[in-house]
Image (cartoon, rainbow, N blue to C red; front, side):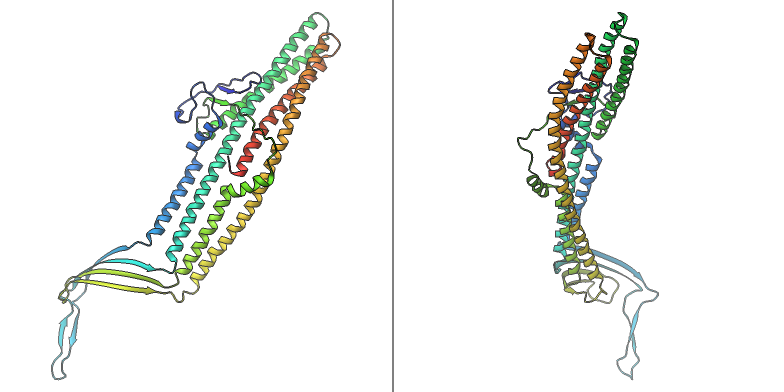
Length: 443
């Protein structure tokens, strides 16, 4: 059943049957309490698969950062081999031309075993490791900004589904009000017709209008059921779960929001801008790391070797070394790879400038929408009062046999239209305020 409580009741509360099944209690309001928008946000964020996927990307970026930092640590490598030769290697030694040469075996057998353990530590990499670490740090920051963007998008989607239910609920209340009003008028017309005061076509006209109103009620009730299902899907609940929502009150502003002020806040606060900036920084550091890989790399290593079946007196050998590696020429591979990353950085920076332009437009549109819907509410409220007064006068004229049935039906149509316009203006104003928060990154 769909029950939506309002702080100021407006019209009859509609009821639509939905069955609550297998719903997690962690994000549900207490029985008898209406669910607020903040509770809906928590429920939506608790089970959204897009958010879970973004969280995994953040975790993957953190693993990449740990891997980049581990490049600074010593590495331990172990090797072992067992070799079998077709014959035992030997060498000939000639001491004098007068004496025959001597043949000495180089190994004790035609098979031998070699094992070694090496510890290596980079001591100077020309910024290669540092660049990789900074690039990974920037990537983590970018993914976290992307997480913030996903949260904002989920909140806005949830708010849209929430308001859609409220809007559909009000639509059903208006449709029910129309059926109630026309039913009462139809009874009056039937009474007048029975007394011979009105013609048959008055009865037919009001019955046709009443049938049309009932069809509208059925369509709007179905739309409300679909809105409830869409809301439940957004929150990860069964589609037929019960929906009990608290109505939203409009945020009033003494003055209209200043476009320049909110635009500046949006450019500073939007996670999309931070994400693109971090991506550009990551690509810049990656390019520096690639260039550094072609510069001198200094490595300190120590090793232990064990060799069997040799004529050596000592089978265990310890060794230490300092090595320098410098790729003087690689055919331009490193240079082209670095330039590729730099071009990607420029591309991301261009995307950031485009995003800034789009954010300015979004903020301006949101500010204009707030202004427009605020004005529409006042106009719609006045029109609603006038429509209700017009209907009262039309009914009074009809009962006094001064007016016509058509005037009453037209007045009722104007009342329903005015109610619908007022409700749309009200919820458009609510959504305009929420979209403004999304545009500034404050939702």
